[in-house]
Length: 223
Image 1 (cartoon, rainbow, N blue to C red):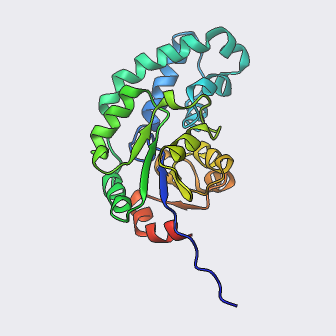
Image 2 (tube, helix red, strand yellow):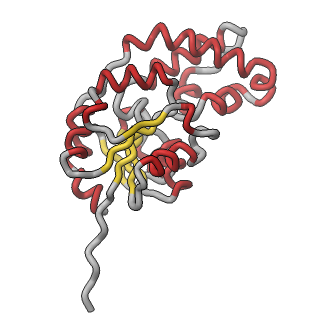
Image 3 (cartoon, helix red, strand yellow):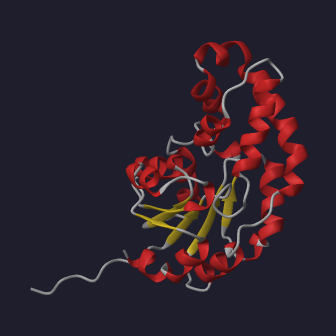
């Protein structure tokens, strides 16, 4: 009996915040300051553990349903203002551009699946010079439900007619969204989540850095 060779992935779906750009702690600070405007003081570690989840879900996850009902939209509006001040400080993570190029030269479709606002995504695309290598990208306007719902991952795949995709992310929410979309997730620790957290959320493997992931890229694409 001849065993079949494993199929190679035809698409890589990348999360952006925390995976390709070093923004998770900027987001956490912005949310903390937004909550503080309304006399709310959730601890920062709790906020950090919710980063990667969509803003439509984060307020309730961090502060509860009552706060969401009373202040949700106001907190989100305050977060937009706070993060706008921090956005110029966000930088690409080491090895991000090189990893995107490594995927591109392997003739694999590359989608940046961001749930960020259009101006944030535009800024990240400029930082990474990503327009020259990415097939397409998403913004918060592309999906009704944010992560951990699979909507954004499914939209990203649909944009390039992906048949066999893998996702690269940094948070537990990326792994859960990928699982719900029916594709494997590989994680990097660039967002500040632990190996145990990421594997328990469903990540197939966890890499310390983007450089480590790039060294294993052919294995990831063929797994």
